[in-house]
Image (cartoon, rainbow, N blue to C red):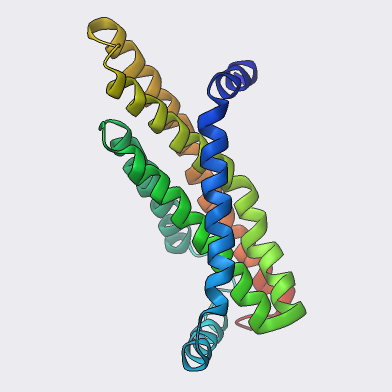
Length: 201
């Protein structure tokens, strides 16, 4: 499995490199976006953030974990569907950029608003889950982009197309399971942050 994954990435390294660059660009623009906020908007976001962290659950909430897992699954399912269309590639890249933007904006805003406290909170509740989630996102987006390109080129038909579709669907299902697991893990990291920083207590 690991060897196949390495060979797959080597074969399509240009696609994965471009997706990584788009994600990184999203992070950069998200960080810059925080600086574009005016004072009333910034104050309102700080109040919303304070309200959010004060209402964090102090123990594992099954509904909270299910919601995180569902959100990740829906995102991967949407990417899979876009991969089945010839015109889906730009939207796949847009999703990757948006996810990067949200991550960059979140990190920059929390650190800027809360200083050292925010940095510690971000490392535990945002960065740690992101380290696990980013590879899942890029793999899912890469598989979708590759399949979309196969359809665009029109060189895969009949039995060959069915075989590629099965490979694409099975691989995406495996990546989606990983993404769902990351969503659940994010809930545990959030709980860890609650206890380490005394939030909601």
